[in-house]
View 1 (cartoon, rainbow, N blue to C red):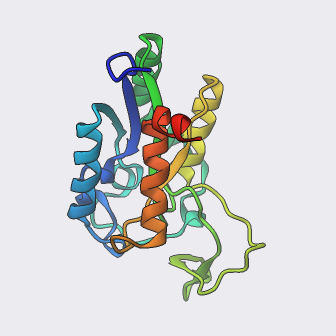
View 2 (view 1 turned 90 degrees about the vertical axis):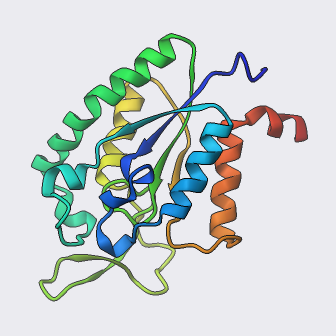
Length: 197
């Protein structure tokens, strides 16, 4: 498929474009966002983002929390409402023969993460945003609340795309960071990988 015919869009968490939305524990890594957006623009990938559910529910001065605290009917409903317009945009682009390449969430985000595993417990005996050291590989792994709802919404549209996590705390050249870029490039440019296989 030629670049002209393969019109691509991507769905991403808002903090990947605006790192100020992130809770302070994750850090506001502008260089990584710059790297990501430069790549997407270079590859002519249209970006659809949804508003940050944590910021729109709790503001910028919120405390870091675990997935457990966000897993309630009120926050889930809030996420569904925030996704209404982005999902309409996804449907409209797909209807007009654009290809949704993937979704990019944020590593260790209780709302937009893809692999939320076991986390430490704070002094109030609720889940903290800090992962346990040396997690058991048999521990359950869940998506963040928003990522889970997005997966359900895309499933209703019979749209299947890779869900990737942006590794905000990884150094350049680390295995996890390299794996992310390989997965993203495979989603954006599948024809390059089809030729190699």
